[in-house]
Amino acid sequence: MRRYIPNTDADREAMVREIGVKDVGELFADIPVESRLNRRLNLPEAVSEPELISLMKELSASCASAEQYSYFLGAGCYNHYIPGIIDHILTRSEFYTAYTPYQPEISQGTLQAMFEFQTLVCQLTGMEAANSSMYDCGTALAEAAIMATRVLRKRATVVVSSSVHPEYRAILKAYLGRLGLKVKEFGFNESGRADVASFEDSLDDDVAAVIVQSPNFFGVIEDLAELSDATSSVGALLIDVVSDPISLGILKPPGELGADIVVGQGQSLGIPMSFGGPHLGLFACREKFVRQMPGRLAGRTADHNGRPGFVMTLATREQHIRRGRATSNICTNHQLMALAAAVYMTTMGKAGMRDVAELNLLKTDYAKNRLLDMGAQLVFSGPVFNEFVVKTARPVKAVNESLREQGIIGGLGLDRFYEQFDDRTMLACCTEGVSRDAIDIFCEEVTRR
Image 1 (cartoon, rainbow, N blue to C red):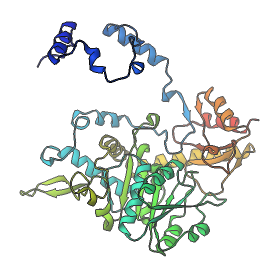
Image 2: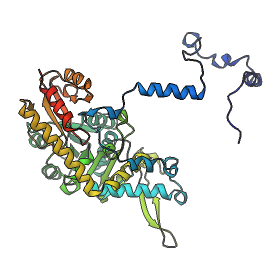
Image 3: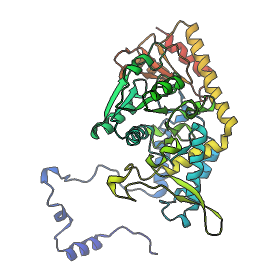
Image 4: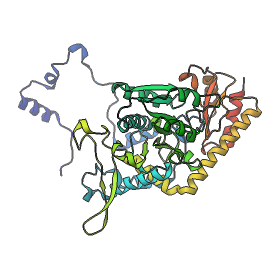
C-alpha cells in the first residue's frame, strides 16, 4: 500500500485540466464573492514533527487539568475516581475498533460485552431487562416517556416532577411536543421531595407515566414506594431517573420500590466528566415491556452444537423494520462508554460500589454539619445522598470566583433554573474526590460575608 502524500502543484494543475476548469477557484463559482475568504488562513507556517510536539507540550502545560481542582459541582456530572484498569481495557484494539455487530459470527466479543453490561444494569437497578445503552440520560428519559404511551396506547399525557433535572425536562418537552403528547409538571415541598398532594391532583385516565428522579436534582431521596402506589392507582407507569448510579450502592434499587422503567446517567460509572460528554444513558424496564423498549438489545443463545453465543435480538429499530412500526429511531448504543461502565461495575463489585457510596454520604454529611455549625441555612430537610442545597452568604457567582482562586470548583447557582431561588442558592455536591481540607475551605467561603 502506498503512503498518502499531499498533492503537488503539478498534480493539482493536471486535475483541473482533466475536469475542464481553469483553476481550483472556478470550483467555487457558485459561492458569492462577498462570502469568500480571499486570503490565506491566519495560521502559522508548517513546522517539523519535533517542533510540533514541543509546541503541543507547551500548550498543554498552560491548560488546567481536572486533577488540579476539587469539585463541589454535580448536577448530573460527577467527579468520581476512575480505576486505571478501565482505560487499559478500553484501549485494547478489539474494543475500540469494533463496528456495529450485525454479523454475530465476527462480533462475539462486542456482543458479549453488551450482554454483560445489560446484566449489570439489571442488577444495579433491580429491573428485569435493560438495553445496551442510550446516548445520555436526557434522551433516555424522553424515550421512556414515549415508550409508556406505546404501552398504554390510549393515554397521551406524562406527569413529571419539577425536581427532575431541568435539562432532562427540557428534552422531554421537546421530544413529546413534536409528537402531540402532553407534559404536566408538579412541584416539590419543603423537604425537597415531590409533593404527593399536588401530584395526585395531576392524575387522571389520560396519564401514561409519572416521572420522578431519586436522588432528585436537589440531591433529596424520593419515597418511590409512595409514588408508585399513587401512580399504579390510575394504571400509569412510574419512571424513575437515576442521575448518579453510585447512589444505588446503598439505596434500595428502584425496581424493588415499584418503578416500571428506570433511566439513568451512567457517567459516574468509570467515565470522565469530559466537559459534558460523551457520557452514557442507562435504560431498564420490566420484562413484559421489553418489546417496546428502544435501543439495541443483546441476547444469549446457543449454536447448533450447543455452544453459547450472543446475538442482537428483538431488534424493532427503524433500520430493521418499516419506520412506522419502529419503537424508536435510536438504533445504536454508546458501546465504548457502556464497556467502561461494565468494567467499572465488575471491578468495584457490590462491596466496592457500597464503599464508594458510603464515602459520598459521609463526606456530604460532614459538609452539611460543618455548614450548619457555621450558621448556614440548608434549604431542604429531606434525606440526601451526595448533593444538597445551601444558602450562601454572598452571591453564588462571587463564592465560586473565590473558590476557583483556591483550586476549587464551587456549586451550581439554582436561580439559573428556578424562579423561586435567588442568586444566593447553591446546589453543592460531595463525592469521594473531595478532601476534608477542601470541604473546610468550601464551607468557609459559603458562609463568608
